[in-house]
Image (cartoon, rainbow, N blue to C red):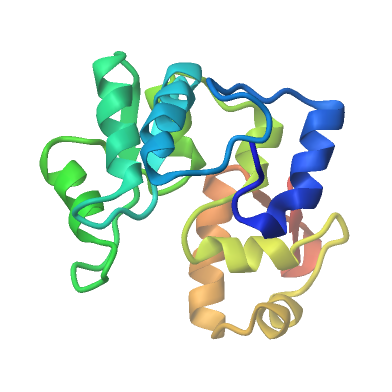
Length: 181
């Protein structure tokens, strides 16, 4: 096994020193194109679910998705613009019934995992994430938050309402907002 791409040599060294590599190939085997489907089969077998982020009409990601389905694993797809070069395979998965992966919550739902408070706070979705990232434990005014997030007040207030409802933010005295602890 050789790190592919070569720029991953340092990561490869850390994994071999501290982690686990699984391969059908002996150490030192060169990465050849026909090896990748065999590698993808192992990845699909080890996974509980496969999330395809980008896939052209013919891609290794689609091979992994097909192998995962054959093994009874869940396959999700991240929607991409239809005119993107890497959209054909991903959008075909969606058309054929793969659930969309719009965020971590979608993957957790497919895996039937209830997110705990820490997981729910890790990545609020959509445009609300920009505002959530500027919240802190110290209450801040709407003006301060909008300045830090670089968004208009009306949009920030709408996002703050969503963040409050979803349990990510709390309104404090004086109309200030903070992260929910």
